Amino acid sequence: MKSSTGVEPIRHAVTVEADQERTFGTFTRRLVTWWPIDSFAIEPGNVQDVCLEEHVGGRIYEVLQDGRERDWGRILRWEPPALVAFTWEVIQGPAFTEVELVFKPLGPSLTRVEMTHKGWENLSPMLMGHYLAHRSGWSLILGRLQSALSA
Image (cartoon, rainbow, N blue to C red; front, top):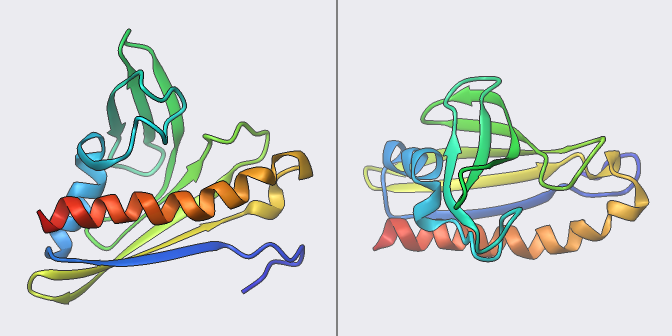
């Protein structure tokens, strides 16, 4: 559904060969093992770890080689193993977008991951250039998750 400004949320979904619990855990606890940090990070090529604090209000952040931390966002909803939602602060504000991931079990070892990235209408026109990059980026990122869980 389009917002009143005509900017559609970015939606992408993948089906992975893993149960809901493992899929959720890999997304939330093992980000650095599958996220393409060499190209999709605040400081690409300088990331040592990616951490997610598992509670509402918790941070998602990258830890750089020198120990500094750079925030990606804050947890808005935490409902393991079914849902996680967070602000996306990689695009420097003052307004931020939001990402929601729903993990739907399709069978004993099959899960559908549905991602919605919304709130683009909150960004200034100058920042809207990030929209197209994120549309293609999320496809690559969730494809990496899918590959990691199918290995």
